[in-house]
Structure formats: C-alpha cells, structure tokens
Image 1: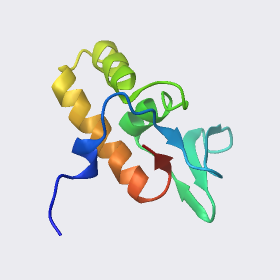
Image 2: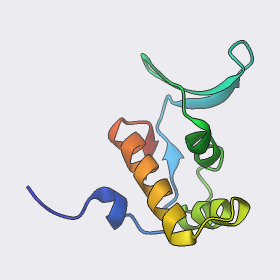
Image 3: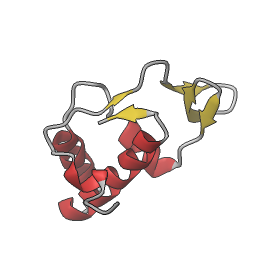
Image 4: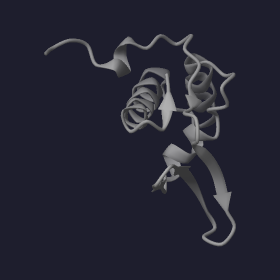
Length: 98
C-alpha cells in the first residue's frame, strides 16, 4: 500500500494529545523526563522532550511548531519536519494521538 505518510497529512490545526493511560513527567530519581505508558517506558532525548512539553491537548500542531521555531531560531519548515516526524513516530507507538 502506498500513499502519503501520516506525518505529512496531519494538518497544523490538529491538536496532539497523549493517549489514554500515558503520562509525561519529570522523574526526580533519574533527573530525566520520561513517558510512561502501560507496560512501556520511553526516555525522550532533549529535542523530543522540548516537543512533548508542549503537547497539552490544547495547542495545535502549528502553534507547537511556531513556538519551537521561534525559541530555537530554526527555520519553520525544518522545525515542522522534525516535530511532525517525532509525533508521527510516537503516534505509531500509541503514545500520542494526532
């Protein structure tokens, strides 16, 4: 089956949120951010952590991209590709809903 990857088809008005049962929090013991999902644990890298901090179920994908592109002084198109790719990967793992 061929077609456009989900990462390219999700509009910027989409509001990403964590799937039911998934928690994103800072672990004091490990001094690291982590994604806790049923029977799974993800330790996101620094870039992924900055993206996930903005996934609140209220901000649109476009707003997340704009915030990060401005904050890190990165071209918006480049940031959009990175954010979409990371969220698409986590959506495939059932961590976020797009």
